[in-house]
Amino acid sequence: MRNITDQKLILKGKKVLLRVDLNVPMKNGAITESSRIEKILPTIKLLMEKEAKIIILSHIGRPKGEVVEGMSLNPISRKLASLLNKEVLFYKNIITENTLSEVNKIPNGSIMMLENIRFNKGEESNDIEFSKKLSNLGDAYVNDAFSCSHRSHASVEGITKYIPSHFGLQITEEIEALKKITSEIKKPVTLIIGGSKISTKIKIIKNLIKKFNNIVIVGGMANTMLKHTGFNVGKSIYEKNYDSLVKEILDSSEEYNCSIICPEDAIVSKNINGNGKNKNISELNDDDMILDIGVKTISSIKKIINDSNTVLWNGPAGYFENPNFQNGTKQIIETISEKTLNDKIFSVAGGGETVAAINKFKKFNSFTFVSTAGGAFLEYLEGKTLPGIKALNNNV
Ligand code: 3PG
Ligand code: MG
Image (tube, rainbow, N blue to C red; front, side, top):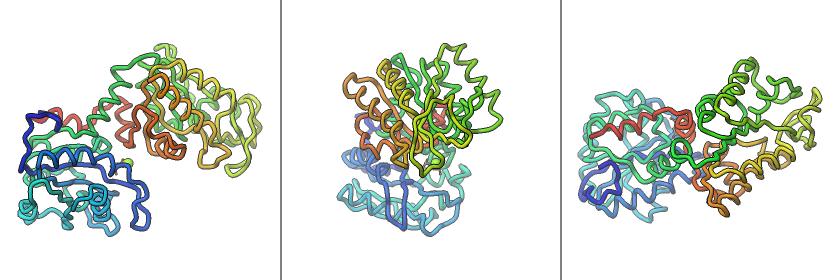
């Protein structure tokens, strides 16, 4: 029984260790963005309906096995309590021999959150003894933290060796969505990929070039493509020594019959705070800086989106923090949103900056699926097997 939706999975009175990702952005002790907390509510409610005793395991930040002030999950437990309108008990210590007796005291259907799991020494090292100790706190384990599943940590991977383990609702939804763009694809399929560095996305391009019809490269990483195919990119950011890599991308695009689309024009300025001017890529001066895609590029991208049945988007098209350079990103978001709503194409977006842009233009609900995972989302698209997911599949 892999999934908590399984009717035959009886959890009444059982202590369920629930791993979630509560690594939300905080400023001066206040939560600035809470979508990760909201996303786990359905799983918690289902476990409450099943009358389980819910013990939440999570982390915030990277305290590296030390108790770090300012990285407590306590404020997040209060936020969760207010969203659920229900008490969330908070266990403020690291895990010791005494933890079990505290956990044993909680009534059926109630919730206890343990302090930042990364305060414990054995968590990030995936220590066997710590994994066992953790598993002893519960009768069953549920992973609902897709966004942590690229980490071989005790509360994600090690624990599954010692306790019956299950998929939560959110992780299931995430995997289903990602399967539809990586293995069960409805073609034509387009990847629109942006952001500043091609080096951080190269493995994704290499993996998806084999299966996708189009790869549209925008943002700072497009400058690297343009520079190494002979264009003057002025003083725009780009990565040096990428000639052979760019050639490799172009060669494999031919081999796999995938079109690579780079900007033909751009919005340029003398600096990031300036005003933009639309120029063809072949007409850039040495002091021009590319800060967004231009109008011709936008219209090509719109056509590609409109001819696709599946679209995956990661990474902005320009420096969208400045309204002068937000148009490319905004148009991509709006075109995908409209196409999704009107023609029911399958659209997925993900990654930190990508989600920030979607939120800025208030289009979160008009994509088929928006992933709030960062590293795990990217590693999945690279074709890697995530240790947390593998561990759940291997658990018997
Ligand atoms: C994330 O925010 O991507 C996850 O919570 C994982 O955090 P980490 O990158 O510190 O492991
Ligand atoms: Mg991260």
